[in-house]
Image (cartoon, rainbow, N blue to C red):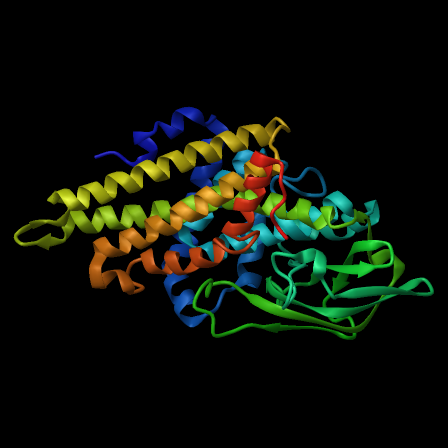
Length: 387
């Protein structure tokens, strides 16, 4: 028997350091996370405060950023870490992505030197948790329509508005909040406990249950002038952060697919149906073969995009192509694996339906599949079709 990685000779495309990072994250996932993830999902909890320092010790928080306590790894190494984290659960990778690719990247790229020195070392170590407030109740795919506003009041800013679907929101020590101003869209750092700022955890989720999701309310929040991210000007600033997070998803979603396929293969080899293993039936092998091919193609595309990003050559529409492909195929693989497991596939004794439920969210956040189709459509035709 061979794995999909062996089938496509994935290891031959990786450096020794890339394989070492992948193995370290895989080992952490197997030893620290897998024994508990089904319970966290069932209970709708996630010990972010407990896990953040451990993730920081591994160098996974803001790992692709340079300086300020960050590991400074390559984009490909970050992608491989995302793949291994999401092989455990999308909620784990989401926590790391929001911390590093969204909150920390916003400060690293658009913050002042003082802001970087104040926040980033503790965030890299997991002592401080961040969140990223862009999406609003009525504005997801169209963030430019946001209603959250910030107005000057002397040297201060007064911020009013609401954000929704914010990962890490209710446990975050600092929120990066994007608001409309007279100067256009700007980013602000809002520490937890600021008067008028509240975060409420969202419940009754059927997806990403092992993840903290919150609503943020800003009611007359007064911020000092130095809370403004000085270099974050216009919608391109938060969208630049989103592109970083989407890149992680290109790899991450494939981790969930790999875990599903491995579970389905193991089950099919041991489950007897009509006096022989399920794996010995042609229909089962056809399903497994098709899924292996799609997973392998996805991994090859992800690695190609990683190499392009490491050379500074990746374009936003290429990241969109990767995000669209990885999430769409990963969800299809998870659903197909469930059919192989039959009724057993709907239980938390196996990971497939948990992954499938999570991937429903991953398909949508950081740009829906439809948005990425339109990004690609515009790149191919030169015609905008968003409106």
